[in-house]
Every structure is written in C-alpha cells, then in structure tokens.
Length: 477
Image 1 (spheres, helix red, strand yellow):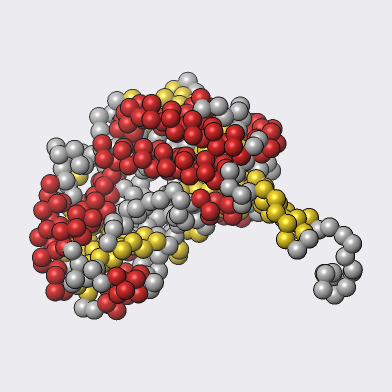
Image 2: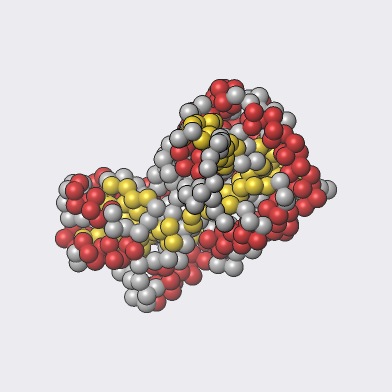
C-alpha cells in the first residue's frame, strides 16, 4: 500500500523481530510499542472468527450493546493516562491533541451507544410490507495514525452499535494505541471475536488488506487515510463488490471576510493550521483573506503562529524526517517562485517550526497538494466571488470555514463551497460524532456519523405479505 506522493514513515520507524513489530518513537528512536506482525493467513483466520461471532452479536438486544459501549467510556476515562502516553510515544501527540482524541473517542462511543437503541434499527411496517434494517455482517475498518484514538474508535463504534462484528486493521504507526482500543472494548464486555485488531509489519500492509477485503465474509469496508491509498482500497473493494466508505485527504480553505472578528478568526486559523503539526485531513492549508483586512489579520495570526513551538507544548515532532524533507522542498519551491516566507521555514530533525507563506497562487504545488505538516499558505481575494473560486480551485473537498459577522452572507457562501463540511466562525478542524462527516471530490465518499452509519453499516430487507395480484404494477420481468 505504498503512497508515492507522501514518503512512508513506517518503513524507517519500525523493527521486526521474532514475529513482533516494534514501533519507534519519532522524536528519540526509543521503542514506543510492540505488536504482533501478522500475515495474510492470520488475517483470514481472524475474519473467520469474526464471521462466527456475528450471528449472536447481531441478535443481542440493542440495550445490551449500548451498555457495553457505555462501559467502554468509563474504562476510557480510567485509562486516559495510558492512552496519552501511547499517543505521545507513537506519534508525538501534544497534550492538546491527546485531549482532543480522548474527547472525540468518548463522543464516538456515546453516540454509538445511542444508535444501538435507535428505533431506526429493527423492523417497521409500511403499507402492509415489513422492512427490516439489520446488521450487514463482518465490517473491516482501516484507521490512520494521525488521530489514533479518535479515528480508531470511529472506524469501529457505529458498526458495532448496529450489530456487526468488526475487524480493525491498525495503522503501523500507532498499532499499540489501536490494540488498546480492542482491549478496552473486550474489558467492557464485548464477546470474543466481535472485535479483532489486526497488526502487521509495514511491508505486509498490502498483503493483509487484500486478504481481508477479498475474504467472502467481509461485507463492508471503511477507510480513513490518504487519497492515494484510498484509491487502492476502493479498487480492491470494487473488485470484490464490497461497499466502501472513504474518508480521504483534504486541502481546507479558511475564508476571512472584512467584517469578521479578526482576533477569533486568527486564533481559529492557528489551531486549524498547526494542531498536531498540521497532520490532520481537515487542517487549514489555505487562508483566503479579503484585501481590506489582510494585514490586520496577518499581524494577529503570526502572533499566534510564532508562539506555537515545541517549548510551549503546542507543537510536537512531525511524523518522520522524510515528511520534513517533503515540506522543506515545497517551501523552497514556493519561495523560488516569489512567495514570501512570513515565519518559520526551518526544522531541527523532526521538529519543524510553524510556517506561513504569503502570496501563493493556484499555479503552485503548495496550493494544490495536501500539505500535512505545520505549513499554511495565504492569499488575498478581491471579492466574495473570488474567495469562493479560490477555495474551490483544488481537487479536494473535505472541510472549509468562513469567518463573517454577517450570517446570511456567510451561509450563502458556504452553500457554494465544494466541500463535505463548511464551518461558519469555527475552525476547519472540527468533528462531531453525531453529524455526517465526509468529503467530496478526491476527499472520498460516504459519511461517518450516527444517522449516516445506518446506511453504511446495515442492510434493509423487504418482506412482502400476500396475497397480491400479479400485474404490471407489481411484477418485474
């Protein structure tokens, strides 16, 4: 599953010894976690176990499924310190990012518990016919490394709530955290085989994923990660006629209009651009400013950016030295074309400064490629029409934000932004487990979220009840 656009940090950050894969801390090279290095045969065996566990779990009362998910919330609170440590050691998570993950993981479990008892699950009668919404079967969730707890739990929670058995294919970069999610649910009372976590060495990723997607018992696939790898997953799923939910790369634009609260907008832009070192699919990659307030906004924004340092605790390591090199190349290329460096731009090992470039335009790589690092580009818009055109001028469409005190104006612009999510007077990095989260264009298809999960993780069965006449209205030939 190699990604040719983004360097693969996993291959230089692991050691495989005696059937175990050792994840190395990106900051100091110490051992962060040890996990089993499974291969395709073990993955297929785990899928068979999930299939055997499915019938009993799918018939378990929704209230009982909900009780297990709520017990998992209590255990998550009790084990928060352990999860913080693992996220710090495996991916360099800062305290704010670890807390974000804990809050989102908790919310995912609570919303899943509510879904488990929803009247939308089960049987209803429509015009003398029975419609039954039931669990799909074995679901495969493939989770990324950058939000280990939040996105690991998102990959499994709603599917479990609907009565599916689930396989979580862990990321090589945070497999220890993903294994702990499995232990959390098991200790909360989840029956054996209902949730399994598959870990592997980086070089066996494709082998394991292909074995799981192609297995006849797997009915659903959800993947969160890069667009490049997402295409490969989608092709595998299409070949096996498996429904696939994809949450892929982003290139979020944050628009600041002339009537915006500039202090609040600057703070939100700094959070969106630099939280988790910018390694979030919803990160603010582009800031589009109304000409009239551009200088005033930038003074406020740069004040925030310059304070976001490793010493302040706001910034941690970028995931790998290869990622730092890629970002440095983008910065150098943009500067060679006349873009101004307003702050940052240098790195010491995997610690990179918050970097702001001014004057980028849609002809540049830095404008079109997902940055996935502590780097943001700024440009100016001559009008609302120009701002929307600039925001939409990229291949991705995951998240966006508009800052304005004029809500009717902001709402009208939001309706024209080509993205799955647009936030008014809020950061681009925003999640809500109860709402449909997903993108358009090269940012994927399908939606995570409570009600959206019903479509993604269940099947609707129609039972007709006779007698009915066989005529042209009811018979298809």
